[in-house]
Image (cartoon, rainbow, N blue to C red):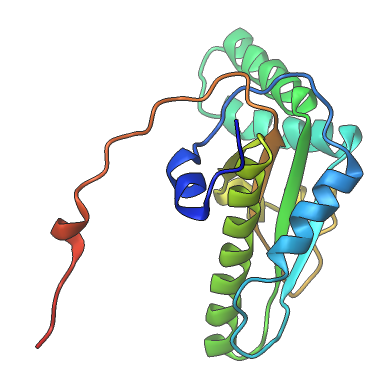
Length: 189
């Protein structure tokens, strides 16, 4: 698959739910994360840190996420199956990276920095496509749970913005339909 252009990479990017067993090297991860640092950053606050979760950390997060999912299941046996399945899913991931934002005391800067972290994440997602890799951005309440913060070493004054699953796609889903851009544009005089 040749090197896609930026517009082509944007069109090819999908949330990948299953990955091959191909390991993702430290060098590959660091190269991708280096591209996150090139995101627009209004005041050059460089508010990001990245956490690369190894097998133990993925397992620990899997237990936390599994427990969160299991709370929604009434049947104890089914809940335990959910816990085991979630841990196994996290263990099987080739790579998982946490995108962390240092929280500025100024609300305006904090908001700008949040956007910067997301733009850096998008750089990583598109560069991954270019390299034949896939990603899945995971967010949600569990990221701010005290158990998650403790397990992943999220310090006071930091926010775990997202976890990104990374690997070689086992399959690439079709694009989900999007509304035409014309339905989302307002032209002002």
